[in-house]
Image (tube, rainbow, N blue to C red; front, side):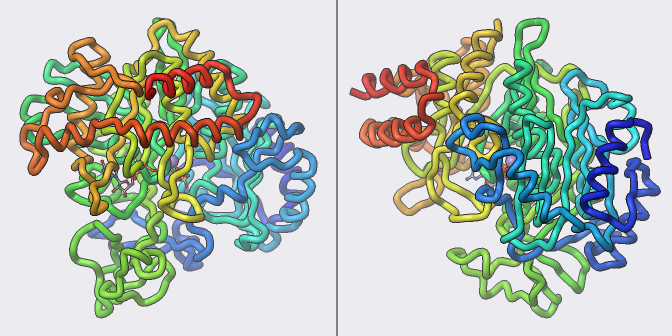
Length: 596
Ligand code: GTP
Ligand code: SPV
Ligand code: MN
């Protein structure tokens, strides 16, 4: 037990409801990690991997029907439906407590309850907030150890305050029919039952740091966003920071850990990672917007990560990492995923797929990844930020980093050009609000369907989307030196469906155009949708197969498809209804007018 009476009282209440056999108060010590790891290994919940090749690494498989966030089972539970808004599932608050109360009743009988105090953000920073997660899953405890600053330090920061986010999680029966992820922003509470996967159960992440935090941010005048944060160092040693919002599995981790092309490295350009998924942003005393990564680790997409696409991520997860739902090599006691290298484990190696079945790589079918791949498309690594070779020196900074540019981006085969700049903050907010992207395996449901995903926050705004847009507009008026706002799209395809832009490290070329724009060092072409680069201003030196015509093609703005998009945007705005700020309708009208 800790000394905080509010924590103790709440834990007692939750224990009364869930009836665990015992309660373990997590302190974050090394001894505790060893003890819990041993226990998880002894029950088969986790496996210890090859100590030479992957020291300190663990392997875990979740239930076959529990491998991604479940947006249809995620609820914002407020007194009034209007406060959740039309893009969220809503349950009336007391009805939700009652419904989940029956599921939580006695659900920890025969189990241990772990009480995890944690901080989102560096200890004692003005950005930071404390949460307590109660869980019956050792896997959750071990993940939270990596993903947050946790244990005693969190209780030290909390002191005797009642001000903490109350998170209750139980695996329950892992039954999708009895799975609910409920948020109670009016009470600073989260109840999650029936899942053992990532964003559903690591309550500090999407549930707290985005859904609850976005609600708090609106109330308190700051922003919680689904954004990476990176620093670009130029040859003079000056570092400028950029934050970028891309939907799930659309390239945040990759951009955050970017390694510049050789020509740029030779000149002295470097990229530093501050965060890969979430940014909390506040207006600083100097009138700039300052960003802080509330997390302490990366819960990154494994497939596609390799020595070429993202060596920094690969090196980050070679030790002290938890791998979830990747492919297992029994002979080597190692792991593998699609896109790691060209040596998948063979049946003779004892290859086991993410479902736990013997696996034959020769049966892999790109059109049916779920059933034929070794690793699940949404398999992930949980690795400490401290392992990252390009971690920013400002990672633990109590005041965050100043943001020069905000970038929005989605996965769009057509329509959106490689990059464009908004005219101003209000137009930039509009650009964020009209984001659309093809769905990915990060959430349960169909993959590859284009949907509107404003600011990459559709699944994560803890209140009415219209009010969220209004908050963006409001913030813009309050930031004296606001970041410039851009939009990128790495995913335009040719007629055969191949990506036209090489992406990854070469995205540096686009980042440098963006920063040059922020410093007024480069011109642009004014189009209907915003400022687009002159093709010759995107440096293609050293790029194989990319010509100035490729760039022209990537930057082209097709009026017909934008007009078509406008119709869809208007429809989407209509769904948001009367909370929609009039300024964004004005922007839409103006865009349509410019398109002619
Ligand atoms: P979450 O953790 O789910 O929020 O996702 P994320 O935005 O961090 O996604 P991540 O960086 O892990 O991207 C995953 C997918 O995007 C992988 O399939 C990558 O191969 C692909 N990807 C990332 N960057 C690029 C790029 O520049 N070009 C192309 N073509 N694909 C990319
Ligand atoms: C995402 O889906 O955007 C993630 C992974 O970053 S999860 O933690 O499951 O939300
Ligand atoms: Mn994410």
